[in-house]
Structure formats: structure tokens, C-alpha cells
Length: 455
Image (cartoon, rainbow, N blue to C red; front, top):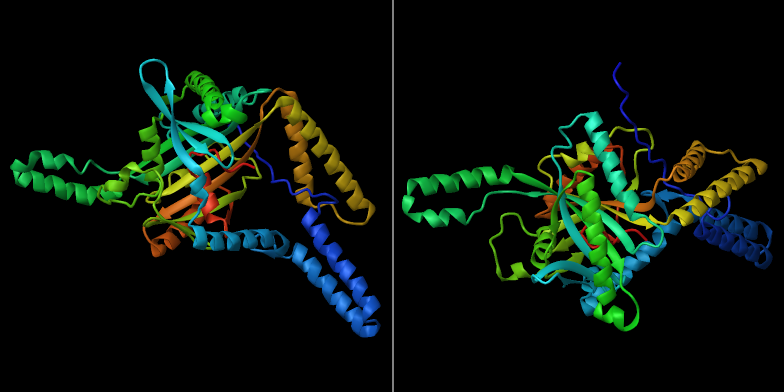
């Protein structure tokens, strides 16, 4: 009898609010509408006052609950306000979300080796990146995939220790245009027909080639005072964390290509917005785009366009180990998948799980007491909380995580077509995507190896 393949279930995203599932913003909006209705009843009076009060309360309830593209108007308000404020700020000062990022270097040992780090002045973090690989995850059977997932789980478990220096752990899977080295034929200019044939082969084949790479980044927070300004404490901590991460990855059977140097890190960031097939230029040594233009639904960096999605829901039912393969293997699509994880200490994770379970039970009792039905989603959330508490009791690590998807194209028309392909692939992977309207530039920085994205 064949062994049953393991199934993985992430559960629904928790939407528990302050009181009976209502968020603070919803309570404020409805409370303001009720207060305004009372004022209208007392000031206007009569049928006209009652009608105006009813309309005001109805509008406030709709403002707090009516969904618009996955969010209520109450949730859209800060997003729209922040987007308009950024647009006004960009038009006056030329600032962007990338302006607080810079690349620095840390010396390692006495051989002159240096590693590259992304310094986020806004968050006060230092982030280093390791390129990892493996042998044919998509080609392996279910048992082999389960073994590799268990090994990666061991890597994560060692990162979520109590009192650890790790601030964020991020993995980035990218699919980028590949190709041959176009400079190679210049070395054989005397061979005439052979050189012409080789160049023709490159021109026909290069657009069909794509390369996949996986990056793992870790972030630590800088200290305070003079140590923070010099970055000494952050450098020591990030080196220690990198060494521990490399040991755990090697023990898990992952191929580690080493920590990216400053130049390799700059090239990795630059490749996220480089124009496909563009010739080399004087700006190739600069890691950041020279120009950034954000719109409501996309962001333009130099001559490339990006659309960024937030993964609002992961698979709610049990899935196999290859549930992301339809998205990872979608051909001819320049895309990036980034997941940023924040380790939660064991003691804090247990307290949080116990609080969520107690709060969920109290919300369900309050709903039943006032005649409101307990929805199936609420029951699933409670089951997921109970399952998480059991896993913590068994010694598993806890992480908060957020996922992002970005698709890149050379023009707006190609971007629209690429977005359609990406959304179809996400449906096959059982992911619910929300386009990050009004926050495209912030979302784009979360798909870079910066450690951003998990508040």
C-alpha cells in the first residue's frame, strides 16, 4: 500500500477585530454615524430629521462594511490619503520609497573578502543575501518534496529562537530573461559565416531562455547611539546570523552559493528592473533605478513597468507540496515571488496563540448571545488557532509572514497581458491576490532583497 502524501494547510487569514470581529476603524465610522444621527434628530426633528439620520447611519455602515475591490471604504481611506500625499511629495522633492535604501559592505576575515548589505535607514536594518539552489524540486516525487520541505522547516526552526538577533528572514524566487553572452562573438570576428550564424542563433534563441534563481535574505536591527551610526554591532550580528544560516542550509541539503558581494548584490537588484536585451551603459554600476514614477496600479522604474500584488490568502484547504508550481513554472513571464517572515519567540508565540484562542471563543459567544450566526470562516479561523497552539506545544517555530508577487514588462501593454497570465497562474495555485493599488512603489521594494514587507 502506497504511503499517503502529506498535506499542508495554512488556514484563513485572521480578520478578528476589537469587538465581535469589528475593527477599530469600523467602530469609529459607525459610531460617528450614530452620533451624527442623534444630532440630526435633535436639531432638525420630525420626519425630515429621522430620514436624514437614517441616511447618515446607513452611509456610515456602508462606509465601514461595503467591499470595494476586497476592502471597505474605511480601509481604502488611509491608502488613498497616503498615495495622494506621496504623489504630492514626489512632485515637490523627488523622493521615493527607495531613497532610504543604500548598499554598504562588511569586511570578513583577513583575506579582504567583503559582503554586501542593504542598509534601510528608515527601518534601521541591515540585510545580507545568500543565493541558494537545489536539484530539481519540480521533478522530484511527493516523498522527495516532503523531505525537502521538512529540511527547510528545520532551517526556520533554528531561526526563531528566543532572544535571537534575526529581525526578518526573506526568500525571493525570481524568473528573469536568460540568454547567452552577446559579447562572445566579438572575439571571433575573423570567422565570417560562422560568426554570423552564431549571432543569428543568439537572436532567435535568447528571447526563449529564462533563468530561475532563489535568494534568501536575513535582516538584523542596528543598535543605538554611536554603535548604530558606525554599524559595528549590526555587522557583527549579521555575520553571526549568516554563518548559522549557511550551516543550517547545508545540513538541510540546500546548495549555498555564498553571500553576495557588494557588486553581486548591486547587480541582483539592478536585474529586477533592467530592460530586456538592453546594451550595457554607464549606469550599470548603480544598483537603484535612476527614475521612479508611481501610478495608482503600477510603478515605472527607468524603462520597465511593474505591477505588485499582495498575497491576501494562501490555500485554505489541504494542498500538496507542489501547490506553487503552476506559478513558479509559468513560462515566458518575468516575475518575482517574495515572502518576508518575522520570527516570533517561543514564549511570545504561545501567549499569542492562547490569547487568540480565548478571544475567538469570546467573540463567538458574544455573537451567539446577540443572535448573530457564527460563520464558517470564523470556525475555520478558530480551528487554525487551535492547530497553531498544538504545533507550538509540539515544539514547532512560529513566524509571521507576508507574501508578494510582482510582474515586470517593458511597456504598459505587455504589463497588462502579463498581469492576466499571473492572475490565472495564482488561481491554479489557490492564492488570492490583491493588487496593491495606491502602494505600488512600497510593494516593489518588498520584492527586492531588503527584508521589507512584514510589519
